[in-house]
Image 1: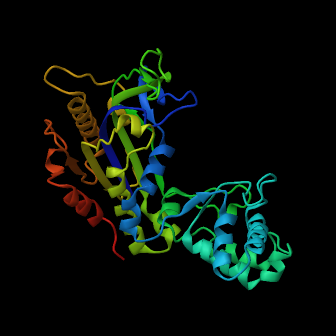
Image 2: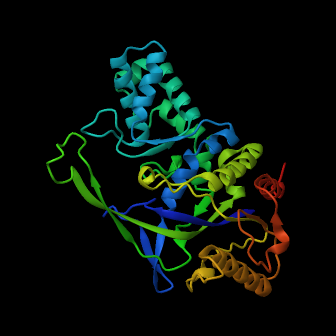
Amino acid sequence: MFIELHMLQNFAPSNLNRDDTNNPKDCIFGGVRRARISSQCIKRAIRLHPLFEQTTEVPPAERTRFLARALAKKLVENGKSEEDSKTAAAHFVGAVLGGMDTKIVDRSKVLFFVSEEEIQTLTELILNNWDDVLGGKVNKNSNPVKDYKKKFSNRTSAPSVAMFGRMLAEDPQLSIDAACQVAHAISTHRANMEFDFFTAVDDLQESEETGAGMMGIIGFNAATFYRYARIDFDQLVKNLDDLPLARKTVEAFLRASAHAVPTGKQTSFAAQNPPSFMMAVTRNDGMSWSLSNAFEKPVFSRSDQSLLEASIQALDSYWSSLVEFFGQGPQPVVGLVGIQPELDALKPFVVKDFQGWIDTAISALPKE
């Protein structure tokens, strides 16, 4: 079973996701330049949004190279000295993750996406084997390390890890296949980057002195973005080994997706713009339809139609052509915010409010 999410989101001038030149990311699609927000940027905004934790009722997982630092704090709370705790934690994490950084003793060589339950389990294993771990008599073949890997092989208690997965090349046993695919968001139209020239005034500069305290430029754009994601519900259930939690995780993803906005340059632009079009589709037919090709030909605004309205109509038309060729398939559920475009194929599936949209999307998921 797949749950697909389609969104159209109009952002005011912003620089939500920067490249290595500090300018908004972009790409070529349909032969023209488009604004782009990377999938990793979107996923981070979703998993860190408070609604994700509130809905799942599970503490968020942490992606870090400083797992040893977190474990050391737990060990101190259990009565161990700070110095011994740091040493033991570094020894054990190094055995689990394939070594520690040579320059920073409590930093591992690789990032690791770890749940609260795993941190607690690791703490208990270290405490139960304290002398060996503190003395450095632990490696990847030691029983405590094997016990940890056996317990968390191909499963996790953290919804964010189950949803977005983790990869550990040093030990594939701890890798978890992501249940969710997230596309890069792209503008539905041609988008050009602009520059904001700014100056900063020195408040203590004498009035007769000329010149600014500093000056510079910030790249930005404004665009209507198409966003797409697909959840493999069967994989999600497998990762969590908990059907009720998997249902909550899908709900959390939908809620957070609608509210999460990337944080890039927000203090300068405050582009806190919610989506205007949301569509969820639950499929049992094995197919998946990204609707990005609805915008392969970039849309244009007219005097009587905004870019957002033109984008919604292009998506509606493309959906209609897919249904006509492949068959009706599952029914979508559509939410519209502050706009009433002329819809054809999708008109019967519009709901009145966000809660109704969530309830309808979740109702299609298995309960047992």
